[in-house]
Image 1 (cartoon, rainbow, N blue to C red):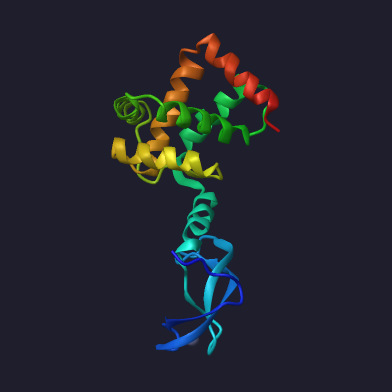
Image 2: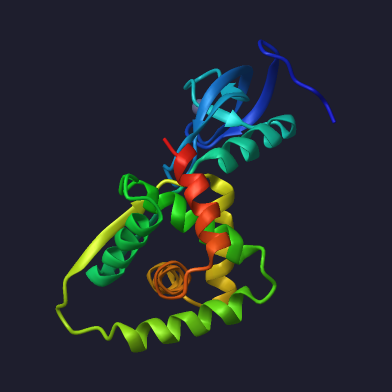
Length: 204
Ligand SMILES: [Zn+2]
């Protein structure tokens, strides 16, 4: 594989000029095609005619992949209000002084724990069924929006759980919140509560 350097010349097809053009290698910030984020200082072959990136050398691929991974995509859903109430109640139960932002830590903890469990899919599907039974949904019932920025590995855990449970974001969140309902509010295990209280104490 040839390694390119800044300032080096080359030739490539420029889709903007619709022609084979002379290029000069330079570092540019490359926005992702879906518009969600940017890979910074990527070495690309810039078209000498129009100034747009015309070629991305193979050596730049790992840097782009790394930047892609680092972009944290928020987990967002519009849940029946009861689920947000349950979450806030659980937060209060764990630590009376915790802010509502501790919701994010609580959900992250349960998502991460679930992702490490080989039985995750069946546990979460069962929890989802129980949630729907326990909190029947009425047409036009109040809903509240939840949006959480979490580390990309947690988003990856969540996406994996979505596919293994065949539940979408909203339904999977209901299932996770119902687990929290059971394990924090209905049948609290001292060890779990202690662990969550420790997390709350260091959560700024
Ligand atoms: Zn061009």
